[in-house]
Image 1 (cartoon, rainbow, N blue to C red):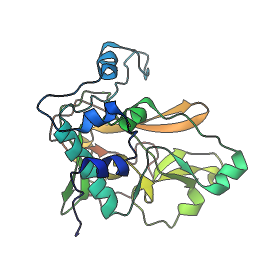
Image 2: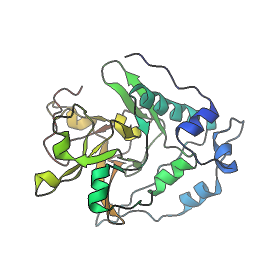
Image 3: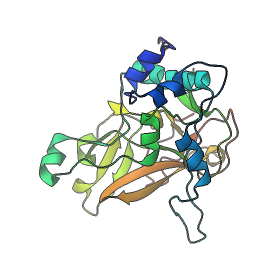
Amino acid sequence: MEFTYFPLVQTKIVDFFRIQRSTESTQKLNYGKGHYVSQDSQKRRKRSSSLVVSKKKRKLLPFNPTEDPLRRMEQMASLATALTATRTEFSNELTYILVWLLSLQIEQFLSMEECSMMGRGEWPPLMVVFDPKEGFTVEADRFIKDLTIITEYVGDVDYLKNRENDEGDSMMTLISANEPSRSLVICPDKRGNIARFINGINNHMPDGKKKQNVKCVRFEVNGECRVLLIASRDIPKGERLYYDYNGYENEYPTQHFV
């Protein structure tokens, strides 16, 4: 696969990811000898409030953004490269198709906290790396603690019946209804974020499950179903991220996955 690497130019990266232009966000992307750490980041590290996911009170953790401004730009450029090469528009929110909007009158919902962080120029410690066999993949660029939020799975929301013959290999079930015609899926082929490049495990290989280090958790946020990808265990720097696309329903064909 031939592609062009996205330039390490601050203005181009800011425009590509639609980062809110402010003195603070500019400082976070500027090159410099020291590391810029915002007061918001310092406050977040002191707070312990987060989403509860079990009776044992284990809590989801927000990602710890990379503080090195040059490395952060490299991380963002790696995703911009992959999105551009696959002709995917960057989006950090679910996009409902027009028919669905008209039938249910869905309103604009608030973004998740981590999406707001990215909008301010903060970035999860992830690198998109091209592999000749697997295509674009995602690697941890620093240690990621168990239960850390990796990203939200976003894209176009459509009825499953409309995508039965879709050739895309990144569809995610959003809502599985008793009536199949009402089931919804997330399709990141036209709009999406870094979740689009987190590869799935091969459920037909003995060692497939051992590679998994990411799982999905579904939440209701202001009446809307949202899908978060979180670390299912501690992930060391340099390890590639893998998710089980059949963790929710055992209907996804993964025999061709590496």
